[in-house]
Image: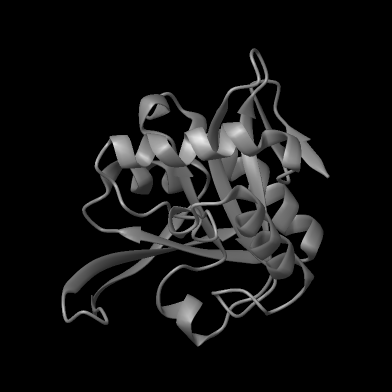
Length: 182
């Protein structure tokens, strides 16, 4: 299954993209980032095959780290096939995802940010969510992450509320919640 807008193409991960995916992962480490949103925890995997197995397990049911079925897409530029981002669509929400994460999580590789790819990727993922029968997507972002908030607003997001969450490590995180009718 794939989705395209002529600039980006969303594809589910395949073995043939192992090098591209691991280079994508490394681009975050090179930028000093230790977490890749919407990647089904790619940052925790040293081995592509193990990560791909986990992604496929998540697609098959509520067996992954989020506890709900989800579908992960890689975003490739149509012009040259370069992997620029990833986006994970959760088919349903549980209490944890209602609190933080929502229906969709995504990341753009650091070298490709601020080029409009995140908004394009999100719009394509919304089409998939629509096909799943989701009527309204819940999505959130760190309140300090203005580029992500602009992406969500640009894709039709409507602000719902802001909250301060206490994380497992005791730190606080300010979160802005949005809804996107689809």
